[in-house]
Length: 250
Image (cartoon, rainbow, N blue to C red; front, top):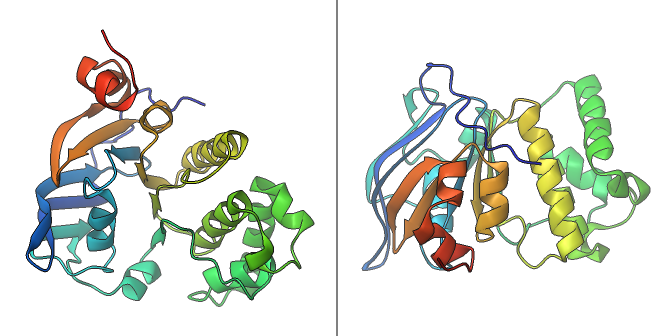
């Protein structure tokens, strides 16, 4: 499943670039002027302990949380502070922590909601079948309401729903949280498969080992700041990362 063979950048400008990004909650500066970029077709992970500022960073990028400083550039354009729905139309989709499925709607209705910006019915039908190919369990339960699914099935559905918008950039916030080990493995296999199809991914994850094993590059975040950055395989071998996030000692 390893994707960490190094950056797949082609020399083209980054698909996403954030510069000196700062995000505050009241008087608390949760994100403290960070720089980060994701090249086209890359899978980049942002790891760190709970409360490091990872989710806040994502919310600032995708317009769900006002930023107090810095710039977010997407496809070369300054999109700082643009509303989330506008960014979805431009191909930036987010799978939030906690999944956020529509519990009263069926699996298939949830997937259709993911394509709300589209009018190409034939393409939507094709993409629903693509999601079912990635997640056969969803096909088996396609008429079942999302609220009755297990946590792992809801995570599959949330990822599938985001793919229905045909994103150029997919933001994943803690996809393994609260899942059984076998389901975590399935979710990460799917992340790798989606990346292999050419979708650019920024992955936020507490499971540092799995994130670095599937990513091309990684960033380490502590207390609202980026403290390390580099190729995923290099970070996997870094003694400080191994001690702090992989539970290993020298």
